[in-house]
Length: 313
Image 1 (cartoon, rainbow, N blue to C red):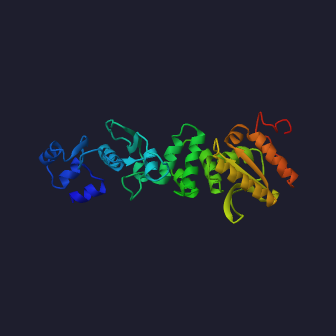
Image 2 (spheres, rainbow, N blue to C red):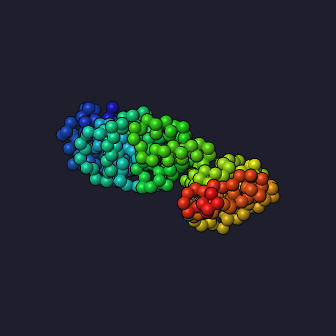
Image 3 (tube, helix red, strand yellow):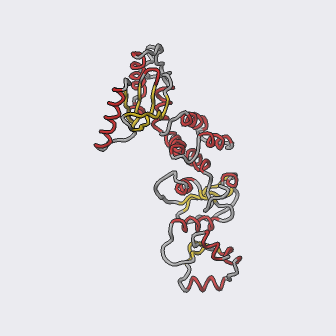
């Protein structure tokens, strides 16, 4: 039984678990004093010497935080592939009302719904992917960061907009609820990155442009590519690029893609992060002009004070 617990918990065990497996406090002291085991936190031990691997650290934190403790926020995102790097502090959520003493290197969160947010099977205990995404979104520094988490999770195929919306509905209170709901609708329509969400929100929808199809699969020259946005009715392809700089090979690839679009009779337009975030009205004006030259009978509308269409409106 002891071996099973240690194997499941990456060599880490709590005092109460060790006692339940038949060890005594005297045996625990002897193993620690001999160097065979080491104390990680008060009442939490590693059954080996030397540095603790990341998995062992996370188990130690959960055991130290006590019953019902659940890894959450960025730490849960790390475990489920929503982020690619490891960062401290370790985030763990416990039931509201519990009094957990500070743990070095750990950020404690309190929630009355942690039991509902915990994944039923994954170990070490962690919040579900949907709850993790929403925890990160509602605690983000700004709205852009908040919207980026759902986009990233869906782009990496860890969840779906429908599942995130259901999880959002279950929360009685959620910061930026309306904005996140709109962003998830955009993701469901095909937007896969924060830049694409901003394009839909600040360029297309804000100025009344015809909605374009997102992430359109295209086969040109024997190669499959995905266009960020395509207005099929007007033969316009819009590429959105959030990279600050392009390596030569990527610039060459983009040129080939644009040239292929022209040969197919399409009008390619390409915008970067600065265009969409700092000059959305001018981008809308440019796109609207191309659409009108290709048959659109409408006109862009003003998005508010300071918009380039404000006077005309």
